[in-house]
Length: 293
Image (cartoon, rainbow, N blue to C red; front, side):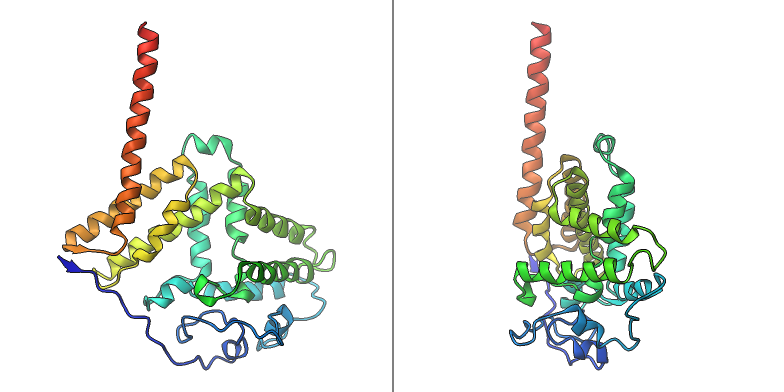
């Protein structure tokens, strides 16, 4: 069997974009930036002020409308998702693209789970969960930024976006900023059913995109390293969708006559599904036996 071809993580030239060049501690990924970004210097820790000082259009210190906030969010539309960029996927999705389909997914919450969810609130969480990446960038483990530092950067950014750029009452948007920040904090904490659901949606959207890029590459790109996120999906109804996507991936590579990477992980996840089905059948038989007795 032919092994799947993996596109090498080739280094590329630095971007000539002045914004990207200035954000040496953590540039939002662009089509020509390197896959792994350098950790910030201890002498020059990452800060929102550092980032906004490099923007070509200055942000007014005391905005009187949400317009500066909206301009800042434009960066979500132009920043590619880092995982795909590392594999040199052409025309890869932006952060905003990812959040859009996540938002649609929340509207399609499966039964019976949807009866327990506040669907509009789930959509709200999906729309704001990656908002901080407008200034922080799409950090991955390969950026070597510790989780506490990543959290600090994102929380600092959200405070700036929601308290400074959406300051009440000067921007005339009421408590919208506070609501956005609270939704972001809820997602980060992952304590509520809605936030757990949206975390599952986040992972499912990534798996969908993984399969779609592999299909588009017609077997020339193997994105199997992302299969591991399937193990983190918690809710039973979402696991059903996840396994369907993994079965699609399995069928695609089998049709190509290629054994892709991480095929063992996929087999384990699908085998677990069969075991769960058998247990469910046993429970149903036990109930029928009790009723018959």
